[in-house]
Amino acid sequence: MKIPLLIALIFSILQALTQNIEFTDFFYNKTMRVDYSRAGNFNSERIFLEQIKEEPFWGGSQKNLIDSFNLGAFYFFVSDSASGKLLYSRGYCSLFQEWQATPEAKKTPRSFYESVVFPYPKNTIVLELKKRQKDNSFVNQFKLIINPNDYFIKTEKPIYSSEKIFGNGDPSVSVDIVFIPEGYTIDEMNKFKQDVLSLGGYMLEKEPFNQHKGKFNFWAVNSPSLESGTDVPGKDIWKNTIVNSNFYTFDSERYLTTQDIKATRDLAASAPYDQIYILVNTETYGGGGIFNYYNLTSASNFYSKEVFVHEFGHGFGGLADEYYDSEVSVEEYYTAGIEPWEPNITNLSNFEKKWKNMVDKKTPIPTPMNSKYLKTVGLFEGAGYTAKGMYRPYNNCTMKSLNAPEGFCPVCRKAISDMIKFYTE
Image (cartoon, rainbow, N blue to C red; front, side, top):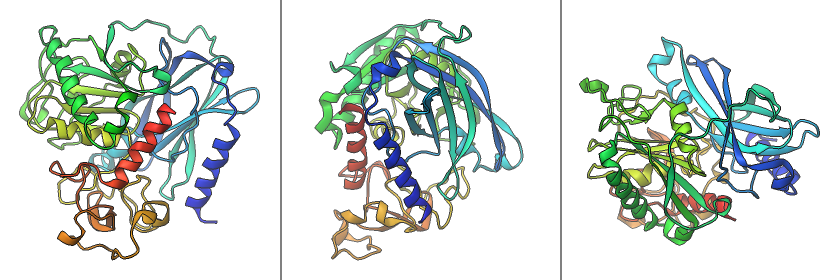
């Protein structure tokens, strides 16, 4: 049996075995957060525990506890210690695996602060962190037995308040986005909330979000920064801000991120959430989106609305970049001969599990990039930072460029819709 098929079978079995989990039998309606550092270089890494915290809200589903998408560079699993029953799982990414593909990782080892969150368990659990290998299998990296009554688990309350500024759905059946203001001073907090409604509202008017508009809640955290803006190392600009964001991530001028995961999670804990979105108070173009980790974009650029939606495609839908003619910091990010895990790109190693069933039999494979196939699902060469040998499903899409007339392509729309249903049904 081929490894990708075996992995799919394993995830199907795990989902079937856990269909009968009753949330209240195993969890409280609040969050356990486990923080750790991931340290290493381009080909090795180790994980070190930092802290465990109890947080007051749980914003996720109480039904769909087991992740069946098989997306992400990493996976974590929560099992009942006594019975071994799998209770919760999620795929996710972090900045670390991106950094491993940079030139710096071949010269200088580094550590990155990370965290995972899950419903607060009633009984002792086993937490396992796994990493996807080049052949798409997963290897164990870290295992921790956690007694939820351990008095070393921190219970500090969030410092800042939050308020719901859009939506009226129950968090357990909604997509809850907690918005964190970055580089907004206390006098600019009204601007922050206006930016949330402007950018978030723009997204909800686009396909496929407009079909699920009533399933979204927006939460705004009232956490001002001491200074406006963000760090721009390449221009020697440094600002004192709440989550310490910066441009020039991995020496890429427009890549806007934060490595202060501790501060980010502390602020997010002010509300129930499924996704974190950091809005940066700057007019400079840029952003970043990391699957099931956080989304981030500049709030006041001419293209901020388009970037906002693009980055949410990464952070929420697990979608890959489809462009191939722009400079990026990573080198050989995808492995030849191994199908990428992202649902919207393929190198044909296992096209059957991607969008092959959405391609009309009359559509040529590969598909020519001409006017005849502008609105056709096909196989267009050039994607994932690679001009040759990697393919995308549509001529143009929000994941490829800012001027995609139709927004997300049908393949990306389906991936996003499936994720919305997972969180809300």
